[in-house]
Length: 488
Image (tube, rainbow, N blue to C red; front, side):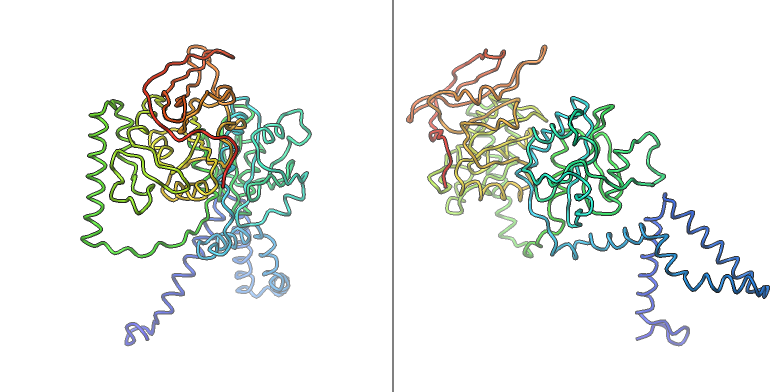
């Protein structure tokens, strides 16, 4: 097939080829821009122009000399532009269609530990460089350091980068939620567009992302400022409140299975509108029952409770009642969720520990209020079901399978703890994981139902000192009992 054959015999494939070549040249320009490769290319272009002039002038000796050079010209170009060619191939390898078959395992469980370590390092102005391996292997860089093959923990990361530790120089490289090695040597970026005040740590962070698809977190030892690097670019001044979102986004598989095509019908539109009306009515009902915090009501109004209930009870999703979710567990009554949320009063960016993930509904409400949520579930079946659901719905919750009565010591201290099961007494381990007061800032607080199996008193606790706690008993509720250990 040709286009306008009576003028110029141009085929559709010719247009496709021109577009493809233009795209490749543009990508090459993007990769070379701001690097020393521009000067090298200019030098090669100058030699080529000189060769044309020599050939036109019929200079025998120079023409022979340039002829000898041209025999190894292709090899010379490959050697001179090796970093740029490597980055181009890497760019192709990062294409979602290619990475469909090269997904890294989810690392959500360890993100909370990493964020907590970064927060501690930042506050203490301890320099750190943490590299997350994605689809491109980093074995050659791992082998330059001290190999650890250790589970991720806040304490271990902070200890590694402590200035008196012999492993603190260089980078930590992580693979599949494990610390593979420390004291690793990384390539230094030669990108001239980087700020001149950046030190070797930040240039190494950019350098490793120029030759791989790694994601890197850097902590400045001078300012405590947190930066991230990926795809050869550095983002500075990242807040702790947003860091876990950056990590989740960076470590999530780049290619997600495409959802089944949805057909928008009158029935589906009616159902969406129906649930929207029911959420609005639920908010009005909660307001009439005494919930006055508009932030809580707005959060309840945004969470799609029908996603958290068993399909058999879908029609009762927005009734103000607890519903069975299997495994002898229930999703809490919306009034109870609103009451506990209002009593705890989480502020945006605060670290909140939830004991009893359950269906995930309470965690979703806390997320909608801007809290950084950590949640523990003791029932393996619920944990395996709820963690993927929260992630699918876009809620960044650091979940853990374990004994809720023991809390999450490695992630402490917390600004608030919310317990969604009735306890005969307040666990001392949870009290000690509340944040201590700092100056005029009050200590951490806890909302927990305390009492027997048939009835508990909602109790508000605030930490006033090392071993000093204020305690206020509020209204009576009935929760499932808070149990220790774990269950299948």
